Length: 290
Image 1 (cartoon, rainbow, N blue to C red):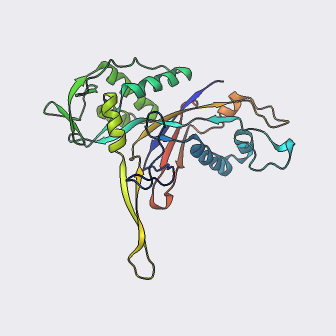
Image 2: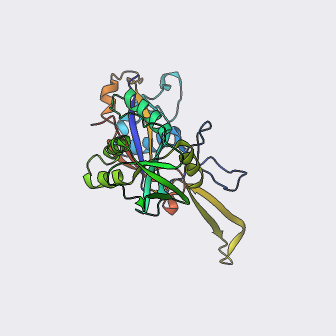
């Protein structure tokens, strides 16, 4: 298997849900069981990419994703594309100075580094442990105010770090490969937070929106039609891994390397639910296509 890296960059609030919940939030987002960090299930992304291919490159849809229906043994085969879940890489956090910070933590960077290296991509070193009262940043950080970094209701001590400078540049290049101005902006807002602080913010700093349904007859809220939805905020960045095999369609001789060129390098997708209210617009960035 030759793994490749992809990124998702949310352009609007993103809701990939798990159905109803018994907690305070009626419709929470999907999270990894072990870490409780937000994810975008690979199955959700795969379905959206399939529709993208059906519209623009239908001749390769069956090869990459498998048949939509199976009428017999001759029609049954797996698709050549294996697509993993997308994991949280950068979470936008409200900041007192600089409006917003793009935060991550050593735990996430370690997993991201491993996937980068498996995909044949370079990666900086993992930052050393950070005190729970500190926030690592690179040169020119715009989130500092009077020697503090204030995120939501947390005030942290700024800590200049070479690793933050390096990681900010690597991630900015991956998310905005052809936009030097956007790269610079991300680098100046990039922060490495302690694992415990980031975990807390990943649970409490997501976006909660209250929704209602209107009774068309009375023009008022329907009885019981009030609910809360959790979203990943716009500008969230996630990453995942995919792999390609040779075509499994009988009579085809497409090799994995040829199929890789069929995947888009940068595609605009609508992912998850709530498309009618402007949610789920994301960029799919394929690190396996140069």
